[in-house]
Amino acid sequence: MTNSNNNHEKTAEDYKALDRLYLHPWVAERLRCINYDLVEHIHQMLVSDPAFSEIYGVDLQSIEHLRQNDNSLRKLLGTPFLMLSPSLPSVEDWRCFVDDTATTVAVDELRDSMPDNRDALTTQAIQHHNRQFLDIVLTVANMSVLSAPLLGMTPELVRYLGSLPSYKLRTALERIRDLPLFCWRFRSSAFWVEYTAHDMNADQVAHHIMATTPFRASELPHSAMWTELRLGRDTHETYAAALMAHGCRSSTAATLFRLPQSKTRQMYQAIHGKRSICGNLPTSLQWFVDKPQHRLHTTVFIWLYRAALTMNANTPQALIAAADLYANLFPREGLLAIDRACSLTRRMGADTRLTIAPCRECGTSYVVANNETKIEMHHSFVCPSCDGSLLPRTTTRGRKRRNENATGK
Image 1 (cartoon, one colour):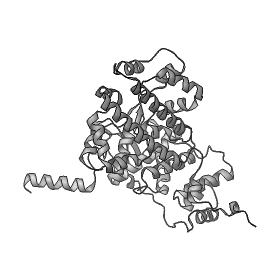
Image 2 (cartoon, rainbow, N blue to C red; image 1 turned 180 degrees about the vertical axis):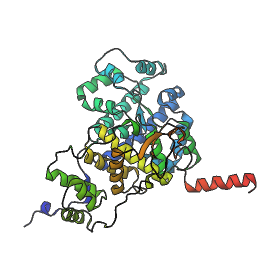
Image 3 (cartoon, rainbow, N blue to C red; image 1 turned 90 degrees about the horizontal axis):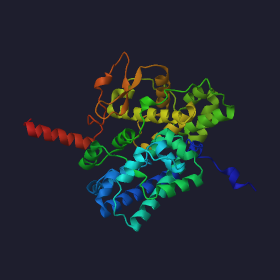
Image 4 (cartoon, rainbow, N blue to C red; image 1 turned 180 degrees about the horizontal axis):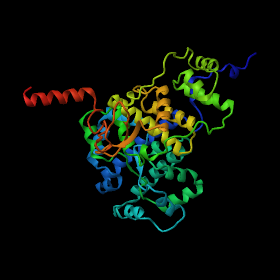
């Protein structure tokens, strides 16, 4: 009698599920639940004392509007990124509690801004949600090479917190007492204008996630060399299978991992139950900046890829992790095929025909053209969010009709 375990056929999700390169569904769900819990906690604190608005970075009117706009809130929470940022953003801020040293300016300012008339229930609520916040931080920090963008923290802080033993963290929490460890992540006026004007879409959410993470794509390492890797055949096949599970063609996987195409075709068939697409691979440089949505999706992928490199992932690991989180961010609206994404990372690592420049309005780094077809001036570049290109089409058409009516056209 055949053991049923031997008959188990791996699914595409099984091939994707590599350690630290895959956001497990239960982790994503925990992030979403924590978001709801902590936002509700902030609301309760603001109701009890509006003075907490300075600490949490959001006022009562805004947080109530946030909770009332169900469609936009679901879109925001549908992406497994924390909507909160750390109130203490640097390693030095945390060290003073972990090692019981002199407090930093950030700690002193946070302590001074706390309302004086705090009762026991308020203290208990803050301490309980501090533990929730730190628990999800440690979970994500130890399970993903993309924990920094997921948590809205610097890679240095994620590495530090993830390396601490549990007893030191417990002691630190006792010293922290009732200082709130988190605040609202999306604090720019542009976020609230877009949120209140209409239902947000996934592209707008992605922009604000990048804009509120304390590092830019331009500040991260450009590339890691494939030729420096000394990976065994089994590892090559494992990484190739993961990329193909994310949609990479068998021919691309064969080239990247130096495997026979006959082998990668068989692997693709086993993963997807169908043959890999044939034909020419996408090679256009212009595609990446041709449309505002293309530029946004291109930038998100290269930002995630480089963030993974910062956390010591090698090139294939960074590609797999970026492809996985990109798919979580755009579960239905993804525009960047993994084959095109592989081409993007190689080209941006090899030359400057595509480069990174900050938006002159919000400072968020985006991919810009710097080639014979199109040259974009860095000093005058405005990102798709700031020029309104990411707004829902109905909103854009409605605005155009209102302008025409106002001018009598």
